[in-house]
Amino acid sequence: MVARLRAAGAILLGKTNTPELTLGGETDNLIYGRTNNPYDLSRTPGGSSGGAAAIVAAGGAPFDIGSDTAASIRWPAHCCGIAGIKPTAGRVPRTGHIIPFGLGTRDLLTQNGPMARFVEDLSLILPIICGPDWQDPAIVPMSLGDPAVVELKQLRAAVHTDNGIVTPTAAIQDAVRRAAHALTDAGMAVEEACPRALARSHTLAAALASADGRAWVQRLLDNAGTTEVHPWRAANLSPAQGMSVAEFTALLEEIDQFRSEMLTFMEHYDVILCPVNALPALPHGTWGDAFRQGAFSYTQAYNVTGWPGAVVRGGTSPEGLPIGVQIVTRPWREDVALAVAQYLEGVLGGWQQPSL
Image (cartoon, rainbow, N blue to C red; front, side, top):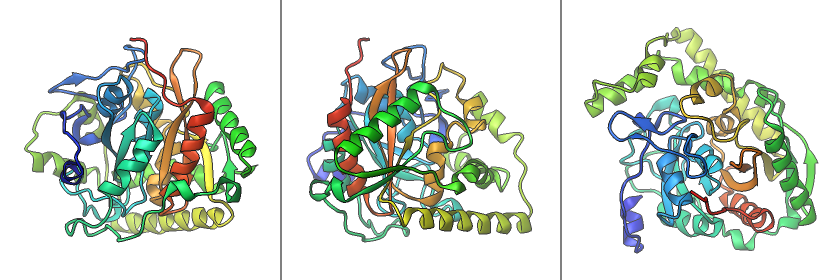
């Protein structure tokens, strides 16, 4: 991705902070320490692409590249009030990333994508970084549509503010409802609907991540030569117990059934509009509890399906924190996600400069 961006004229300013292995909802590590949220220094900018979201939100860089295994583009974009998109699984190469291609059943979870203050920048960057690189074997030579030619009046949207796992704050639900009203005003057919399958998405995603006792995470550490890890990572590794082969194959069958049920739901819609997370940016050191309780299930579900999901700022919490809304679309329809995000950015205001 970096080589492609440089060839297109981008200037690399530097690397931004992440948690170890990009596997965490808060950006903190033993080398560079903690990254703060530019809207409230006592809060996290999210993770894993928290450094990216913070520098972009603060105006230090026009865009950055994030990666997303469970929320790591969309959660930081939500926390810092910027725009971001997790592309369809198979769209953008993972070559060179700490979570590489070729992770077997987990391969579809991690995707790389752009983060920026404005949606139009996402639309400029995505065509540059997508497409086969002849190294990542999962990348598909699928054409990328143009958001500028998407007609909102021809789209159908399903909207929900609660997925049945964790109920979001009132402010987050209100932001999604305002976005839904804005889509109705644009002429889209909008109705309240939530896939029943979402109720078990967090359980499936969590089971897949720990099915081998997190041996896959230990291999990443070993390959990087890392022997000392952050306390959260150590706590995350120590209690993990692997499944039997029979339990694991049953889990894979259940995940495929989940993906099938989600596709059946999406036959009737072009867009799912929903929260990014049940909570706004969290106080430092608290994201783990929220993750375990399912607050991140609003993003995790679409790592399991492999579908694209964009985020744009849709409101502000009572604490003055940004609130994002998530636009999920059918596989390979990033153009639709970006077109809807562009419209909502114009109506709802999008990025707002932090006062810090």
